[in-house]
Amino acid sequence: MASPLIRRGIWVIGVAVLVIALVVAALPLVASTRIVRDRIAWEMSAWSGFRVTIDGAPRIEVWPNFRAILSDVTLSQWTETDAPPVIEAERVEVDLSAMAALRGDVVFSTARLVRPTIRVQRAANGLFLPAIPSGGRITRSIDTARAVISADPAKPDLSKLPTDPFGTVEFRDGRMVTSVGGKDTEILSSLTGQANWAAMNSNATLSATGIWRGESIAIDAASPNPLVLFAGGAAPITLSFKAAPASFSFDGVASMFENAFFDGQAKFAAPSLRRVLEWSQAGIAPGAAIGSISVSSKVTATAGRVKLENTALALDNNPGMGALDLSFGEARPVIAGTLAFDTLDLWSFLSAFTPLTPTGGTGPAEIDTSFADRVNLDLRLSAAHATAGAIQLADVAATAQVKNGLAVFDISDASAFGGNIQSSLRFDRKPEGTQVEIRLLASDIDGGAFATAAGMTRLVPIGTGTVSVILKGPGRTWDSIFENADGSVSATFGQGALSKLNLPAFLKHTEQGGFFALDDVSDGTLPIDGAELKASISNGVAKIDKAEANSAKYKLWLSGIATYAGRGLALSGGIIQPDQATTQTNGQGPSQSSFFVGGTWSTPFISPISRGVSGE
Image (tube, rainbow, N blue to C red; front, side, top):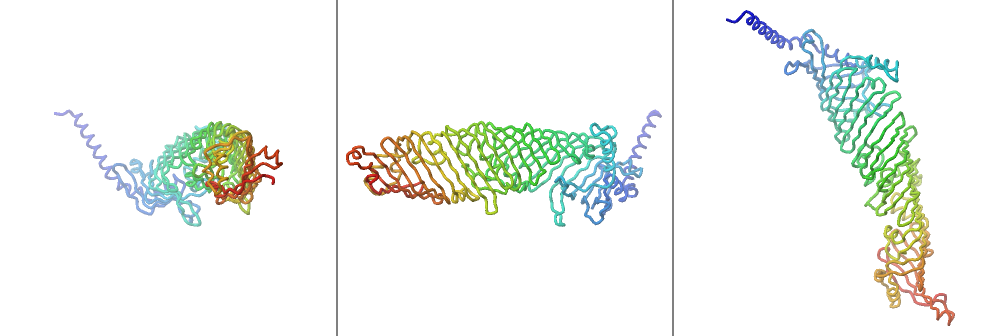
């Protein structure tokens, strides 16, 4: 026979099971009678500081968790009865304490908002934020924390922070809207995530995903002292933002309200700067071939100013180091700084920081001068090695400046083609249209290498020389600029040769008469003692005032015009061959073969005129 102790134990267990069963069975009844809609709404209002209304009757579930399911829930400002709700949700699921419910209390630690709509407004700092409640436990805790910080801003006593519990807020399939012209405009959709904040004086985390401007985004934030941040104090914070067009992260100390600042390490990366500009709707027209960009820097930011120190930047896989300073106090943002690169693609740099759009890998084609209306820029850069299309440069020192409709890119010094290069591009936006100025001075360069880079192959001086180009004109594309440009071109070369000219064959063709293609006599070179070119340009038409090449036996000259539009040629020329015997005996000048050059730049043809004596 079982002992009395065992029998009593069985009875105790049985009674306990019965009590538990009765409690579980009674919970829905208790909830439906005592935890009524108004009681839940009151507790949520006291917690949030908003006026909470619940249109549908609460539905109580016991298993697997004791919770209340609320429908058509709105959170509104107490003082703005006519304004739309700050938050409205089709359904709110609240995890309740069963024991508190039996006592007639509402205690919940988790709230799930299903398909919520959150209304936000643009704040003075440019961020979209929801309306701030006028009361509630959260607001009172922030006020208390603000007093703690004010007592000792440098080192507040965190032990005096409120210890009120907060809990977890989850949200699913929500959206964020703002009012534009009296109508709701969606900013974020498919908003899903959760905020975990056990108590006001504890750490907090936020994780959320959503769709912004057609791209999926993910945001993660954490702080060990979030209440200090909300109260206007400084506290550690980590933040990350990830999306296909770009990613950003920050790890440091921040203060987000009055006297806001950030101080820490920041990283930014984008596979395509063009895509970022389009996606962010920054109002700056992106170039056609802007590549990737990544930035890692020590960031110090205050109101109106951001300093980037020890900045590691990679632009289109061109790594560099330097410092940047961004100011926002003027009418336009100001970007200034110094960057040093080991290697640099100048077209990528120009595309990212100036109003140029590269095309086909050979150079800029279109000019978007609206860039100069949106930002002021003052950058100094250097590069041990650089490329500009097919041109290789070394020891580059350059500047990029954009201000008040004026954009200037200068290469003050660079080594190229065995000599030195200086160049300037200037875009001046005026009421009558964009004015463009191009300057180039190439000193002590290899003429053959320079001509090859410029796309010229015929009658090019091979030797050391100097080239100067000055062009000014209106236009929005390179073609329109060159078609309307005014300016000058000059060049001088020393001893060398003229490429692709078989002079004996040329003279033979002129003697035979009939026109012929220059390509027919391009299988040779002509040694020369020097060459000189001077041309004036007006409305895209180059007038060759002087073009001479001298060799030991011959002097070649050209004059006439060449047009940029159509690439047409209308030149006259001659080859003078001194005849010492004739000159001494007859007193006549040297003999000369004259000819006409027509056709186009790519397919010139020669038409002999006469063969006579110069100076007759």
